[in-house]
Amino acid sequence: MSDRIISWHSAPSKPAYTPPAGAVDAHCHVFGPMARFPFSAKAKYLPEDAGPDQLFALRDHLGFSRNVIVQASCHGTDNAATLDAIAKSEGPDGFKRARGVAVVDPAVDEAGLAALHDAGIRGIRFNFLKRLVDDAPKDKFLDVTARLPESWHVVIYFEADILEELRPFMDAIPVPLVIDHMGRPDVRQGPDGKDMMAFRRLLDSREDIWFKATCPERLDAVKEGGMGAPWDNFAAAVAPLVADYQDRVIWGTDWPHPNMQDEIADDGHIVDMIPRIAPSAALQEKMLVTNPMRLYWPEEL
Ligand SMILES: O=C(O)/C=C(\CC(=O)C(=O)O)C(=O)O
Image 1 (cartoon, rainbow, N blue to C red):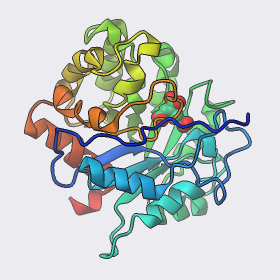
Image 2 (cartoon, rainbow, N blue to C red; image 1 turned 45 degrees about the vertical axis):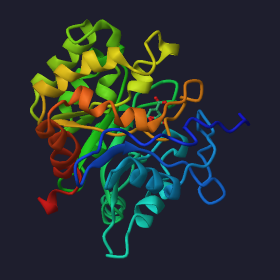
Image 3 (tube, protein in one colour; image 1 turned 135 degrees about the vertical axis):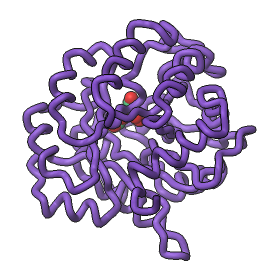
C-alpha cells in the first residue's frame, strides 16, 4: 500500500442551515500528520494528512462549536493523533472544545484508561468491519468493558448484515452503546425496510442504546446504488427514526470521510441534511446539543 488517499472536499460550501449555539459535530476523525503520528502497520487505507487545524477550521466554517473525535482504524490502537487533536482544541479561555473516542488494546489496564480519561476520552470503539480491521475479539472486548471509567460508553461500528449475530455480544455490554451510522442500513429500503426494522428492535431492547444519524454520503452513495447528493433515500429512511428516538440520537460530519475518495462529499451539503432529518428546532437542539452533551460533557448540564 503506497498511494495516500484524499477523501475530503478541498473547499466545502457554506451550509444554508445554521446549527444552534453549542452544536457538536459528534463523529469526525483526524489523520496524522503522518510525520508525527505514523499510521498503523495494519492500516487498510493510507490517507493524506487531515489534522486538527483543518478539522477546527471546518468546525468554524460549518457553524459548530465542539467536536467528538473518533479514533480511525488507520491509527490502530495508538490514540496519539486523536489525543493531540483534543489537546489542540483548547482555546484562549483554557476550555477544550473536543473530546474523543479511543480504540484500545483490550489488555489496557485501569491506569491506562484513566490516563485516556484525563486526556478527554469518554468512550472506546469496537469496529466490526472486515475491510477495516483484521480481527474483533468479542470476548476480549467484553472484558475491557468491565474496566471502563465511570460514565464512559462503547461505540460500535458494524454493517446491517451482522446485527443479529452481534445481538448477544451487545446485550452483554454493561455500559451505554452508541451505534455508528445506525449500523449501516440499506436506506433504499425506506423507513420500514428490513434493516431499519431490525435496528429499531435493537433500540427497543435497551434504553441506553444511542445512535448516530450520520453518513448520507456513505449510505446513499451512487457507488452503493444510492442517489448521491441530494441523498433523498437517506432523508426518507432516517427522519422517522430521529423523530421516534429523539433523546438518543447524535450527529456528525464524518469528516474526513475515510475511504470515500471515489465520491467526495461537500460538507456544507452534509450539514444541510440536518433539517431534512430533524425538521424542528426542538429536534435539532436535542440531536446537536443536548444529547451529545449528555454523552461527552455531562458535567456541564
Ligand atoms: O469514518 C467512519 O466512521 C467509517 C469508516 C472508517 C472508519 O470507521 C475507520 O477507519 O475507523 C469506513 O466506513 O470506512
